[in-house]
Image 1 (spheres, rainbow, N blue to C red):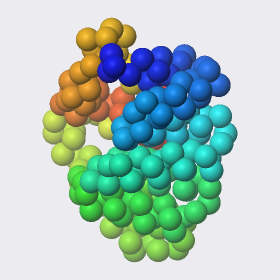
Image 2 (cartoon, rainbow, N blue to C red; image 1 turned 45 degrees about the vertical axis):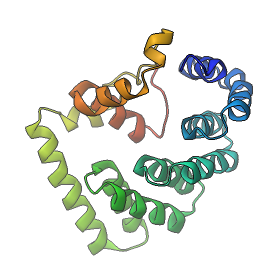
Image 3 (cartoon, rainbow, N blue to C red; image 1 turned 30 degrees about the vertical axis):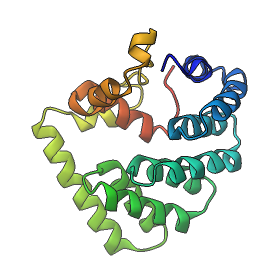
Image 4 (cartoon, rainbow, N blue to C red; image 1 turned 90 degrees about the vertical axis):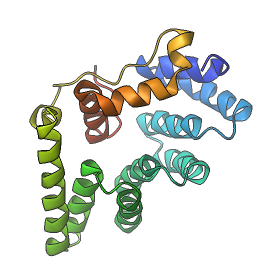
Length: 198
């Protein structure tokens, strides 16, 4: 992402938990790269950390609009909606996420939790059972979900430091989904509510 200097700097500041400083850089990045869903998504995460969930939701809406075929966009927005007590909206987003990626154990589990809140016990149990089944598959691939669930067991996802690393988005995506350590970081980040570990 060497051609995204504001975005790269904003990611570094987000990693350092300097959310106020990152905010202006995300604004700039959105102007120079208005069609990049990652800019909007990460801006939303920054706003979420600044306790601005309504603004965060607007950014997540834009990320979904720009990349409607990517399940993670809906899961991210669902989490924000759940935090805003829009349980029906969150459920709708998790359902879309699962439709796009039926193997997303985190989305299945989160959907089950929300359905359980509304008293849909049977539907929730179905989601929990599916999530458990997917977890067994992950365990067969030596991805230990128990340690992924424990507090503080994992470090925050690492942000590339060099321009060469930053320009390789696909390399990072591959790392997250092809290594147990990368996937554990991803699970931890989602389950922590997009909060970076200290």
